[in-house]
Length: 140
Length: 140
Length: 140
Image (cartoon, rainbow over all chains, first blue to last red; front, side, top):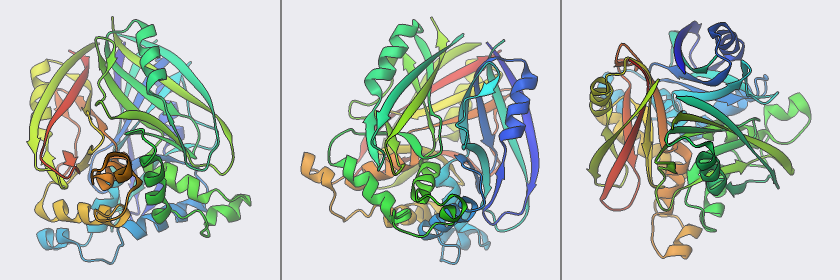
């Protein structure tokens, strides 16, 4: 087995913006030359998350709407007292979803469902430059 | 290290049905001959999820009841406008829980707590045939 | 590639207590001698969870407050009928967050953001002794 590291850099608008990472991850797995294994998709930072979602316009609104119930944007957060910023909601949402996802691949193809995409959600309250690390582990 | 792929196929009733995958996963890890490593349990598809739960009848009702607060079955979802189906709730719940889990094993035994089982939750609104991929990575 | 297992033992107070595991995990990765790979952080047991969080006093209150909306401590849970205990809320919260997290490392350093820590949350209703297993997989 081998470990190959790749990085995806992207700019986001924050505010629950959701990005489809699937083509990027698929391409990096193919480029790695590994045929069978798993790719760890990890975002550094505590106000963004990685999960899977059918990437269609309706769900890009529905998922943030559900998270608004759990961690409303305009609530009082203790976090705001610590830093004087206003992204407490972003931190809570990110902790609930988690910063990473591991996806298996065989014959160099990600084992996703047809309507299942790997997505980055950025919950921060301002545009951010994000670095997503791919740790590709497997055999040739 | 080696990578060994196994598949668990199962039929579910959807509608928040929860299945205990632990015996299947444990058996496949033993059959793999690997003694030490990690097994990635991954469900392809955007309306089911993998997590751990004490598999007892009470919690099989309690966990869906909590998710009903976040993503009620009978709410209006933008997703319904895209496809004319009614499983927006299923998509949101699945994205929150996530499609995968990685469990360590040593001496061929999953490192779960006694009251902790690996479960598949199927949120879709109809019976489904599900494929759960196991990517077993480790050493003999 | 190699697999190296380490264990972190800690006592918690339960009741949503959050512990920063980052220094422990970083030290074990360094001690392992592996330079590039991923560490699986896994808690055995169905009433605790692992995620990442900016470890500051405000968020240690904000995250439990959000979970209280989803799975209130003082609600009726079917789980209580099964066992006659009162930690249904703990089980639901733990299932939502999940018992594991995988973090990549390169040059022996965890690829976390500056304000992003690996945390254990213990939701149980009483003090617990917890064992967190680290499965460190990678190359020298």
